Image (cartoon, rainbow, N blue to C red; front, side, top):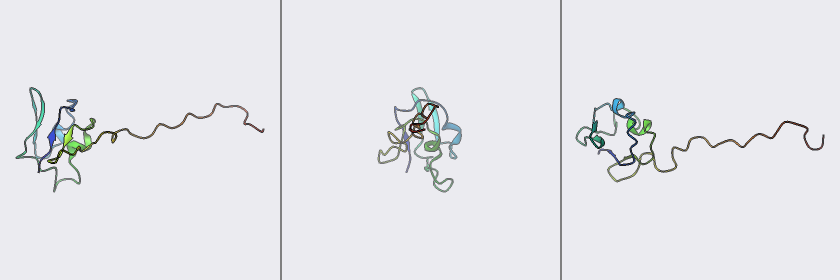
Length: 92
């Protein structure tokens, strides 16, 4: 069981210090995860810490190729509708 970093990585460096097993390393072409060291944080955390901090959708995948942050998952809170302009309300 190990995760992998895809070409969707934005190279923000956020994941590097969070890995409890120091499985993530910076290389010439980006970041890599050592499959011999990656435990997906099992036994340390409820979820993989790299996936929890990663700002890029699809940048981390599990052994089956499933994205930890699939497309559309990091959209944040929905934007609230604009408030009506102040002034008299209809019928007043």
